[in-house]
Amino acid sequence: MKKNFPDGIRLPSDFRSDRAIAKAAKRHCTAYTVIGSNPGVRVQAESHLELVNLLVMHAQLEVEDIFDQVRFRWNGFSEKVREHVFDYVAHIRGGSKVAFAVKPSLRATKPEFVKQMQEIAWFSTRSGFCDEVRILTEHSADRIEQQNAQLFWAARHPMPSADEVAWNVAQDLVGAASLRDLTIKTGLGVDGWRALVRLVAAQHLVPLTREIIDPQTLVQRKG
Image (cartoon, rainbow, N blue to C red; front, side, top):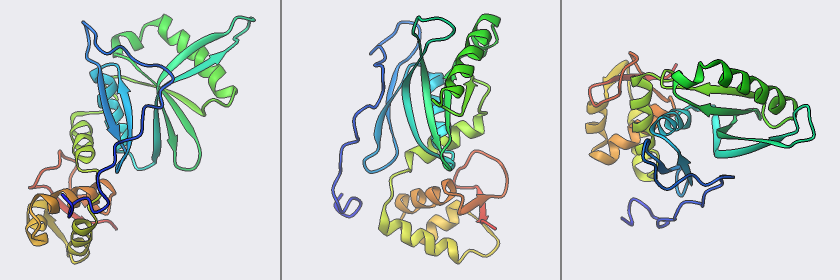
């Protein structure tokens, strides 16, 4: 344990949500997880659909930070203050912010929901709350994106000694090789595998084909 975490294990930061979700629900799941690494921050998901899209978002290199259950208030065309809670707001590299509403496609295509979100998007972007509003559904990410995002999340914690070895193995790579063969070259077993997955997540190593990543996946150095 000391070898893997030389600085010890730190607990993740507390929730930054503007709204706490219900701890349990009869008709859908609720989830609590951690994004980021060592120690990361705790986040909420009010459905499996939200959790899946959260992990896919977390795997994107241009996303620097993600806030969940973010409240937006506006006056509309009257004096009455209105409120909407976005499922997620992502801070994008370069300074922009994208607010997300996650809904099943059956609901996301209903005219009344579309009209409501158009109004919210108009006020939220013009007020400077965010730069863009997007709707995410079960069709926003395919099975490959979902599975790889879960793998990247599981292997996200750096391990300096293993990362250095994996980096050196990757730098010596000529052409393509399977992640299994590269893992064997590290001599570190599962720690070597996880370190190589981190290199794939960071796009230092790139799969030859778009696929669910596993030990048989062929990768090459980027560029």
